[in-house]
Image 1 (cartoon, rainbow, N blue to C red):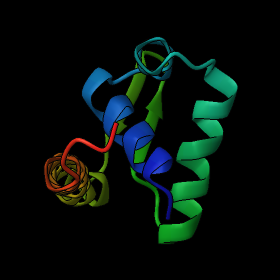
Image 2: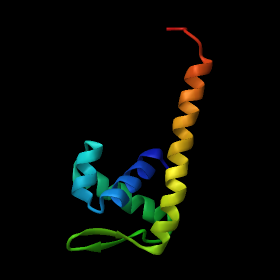
Image 3: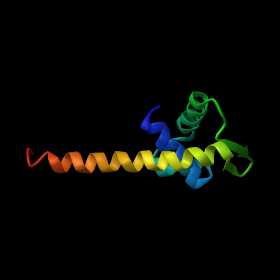
Image 4: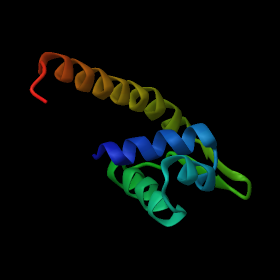
Length: 90
């Protein structure tokens, strides 16, 4: 599972719309939609209900969202701490 897929999922969940999430991520809609479909395929369950107005989280999506946010937060912490431990090798 890639961080890109997780970031894509969180953006769509927060925006509730693939187009708005794509703009937020500086992507176009087709690759973002592919990320979501690939993630759902990997997890073996649908995360969103597709509606005429956008995307609505299904119960599995609600569960995954809390984990996805924690994963991304942990990655941010790891990056900050690693950079801090690196000293000034610039």
